[in-house]
Image (cartoon, rainbow, N blue to C red):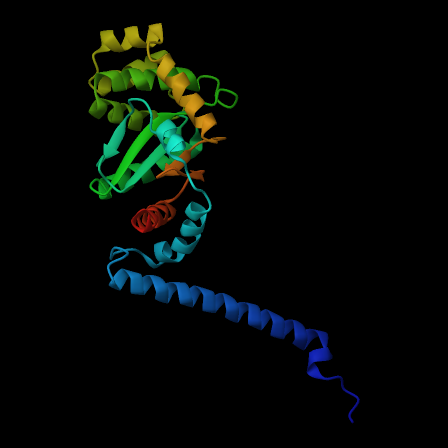
Length: 252
């Protein structure tokens, strides 16, 4: 006997062995999911062209969406009203986004959403709704009213107005809003009258109430076929959520 303790009773080798097993398990988990999703892509169950990052995010996206079971009543609530839309109304995946036009996180997501919908114009349908949180942004309800006034005239011109709103979050004075409306090609007399009379306020208030009823607590709040996803997402996360929603829709 040399007086040395067995390796499994020495702290450093034991810790190293445990960490090694954890690393191997993590690598195995990632490898399993990579093989799984590459197989699904080759079998046609997931479209070709996804990045490795998007494929790696799919398991988490599936877990998030599978954790909720939206009722028909919830879906009816979040999709209710006449709202700005993009994409194909007959698509398998409907995405409802509740936004606050003064929210920097909504601003961050706006370009991601627009690029996503340009890519998925045929297989996704976006419904945009108002969730002005006045406790954080005192003027935001007035901005929602103005955006709805733009939408009253033209959906296409609304989206131009929408994009300008997010280009500069500091441009919120009545003159700035009027300039955006003019640049969007709106009828200025009708727009100004709509804004000054708060003609669209009932629709904004209903949208806010629907967001709260559906569990919304902040912006942006997304629903993929009724499954709630909170917070801003980058392009890879958004694509992964969409692909997970497609799979879930095909299973049901």
